[in-house]
Amino acid sequence: EDQVTQSPEALRLQEGESSSLNCSYTVSGLRGLFWYRQDPGKGPEFLFTLYSAGEEKEKERLKATLTKKESFLHITAPKPEDSATYLCAVPPSGGYNKLIFGAGTRLAVHP
Amino acid sequence: ETGVTQSPTHLIKTRGQQVTLRCSSQSGHNTVSWYQQALGQGPQFIFQYYREEENGRGNFPPRFSGLQFPNYSSELNVNALELDDSALYLCASSLLSSTDTQYFGPGTRLTVL
Image (cartoon, rainbow over all chains, first blue to last red; front, top):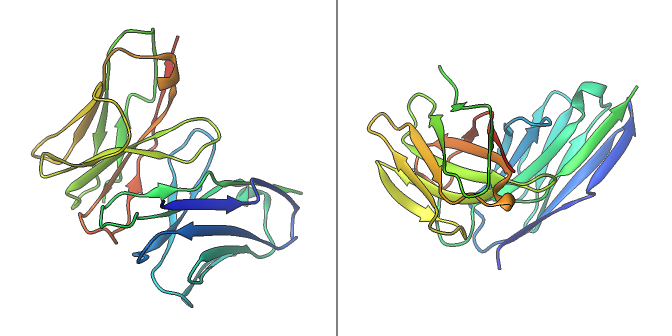
């Protein structure tokens, strides 16, 4: 069964304390892994797409990496404005243009 | 370039009623997908529309139905509302390719009393 699992469920960091979020997936023939940021009560905001193992993408304090079974979202020297829920998603096996989401990691960065 | 918009922002209904949610897709996109997000969970795929036809459906009952119009905007209709239908309803627009990025609107918060 196609599945996406994110860990940890929640993460509390001090400002400047770097860390990583994990997204593991079980799909056949990965056709992309998507990271989104979601603020409370808002729609997900697109961050990155990764297509192949070894690929990396960066945006400000965020860097996403991909292996054959998981992806990491590294947050370097986070600021309070990075507080949000981070979601990862993959298209399922079988070619549909839909996304299977993990439950997300709720990140809180305190000054 | 106009992003994805949704209306209304919030909605309160009572059990048994019907509701219609609306979505305008991003300029240049021909595909609209709808998701339901319960509190504390990731979005769950409801269905997708491409060129006014349903193009895939998740595990939702037939009382969830939709439409796509020639301008690629879309509606989500839910009949016979149940308490468990309370959620954030998200619309995403994209091109049809399975590798294309889906861009989400701000969502409609539906509360069923």
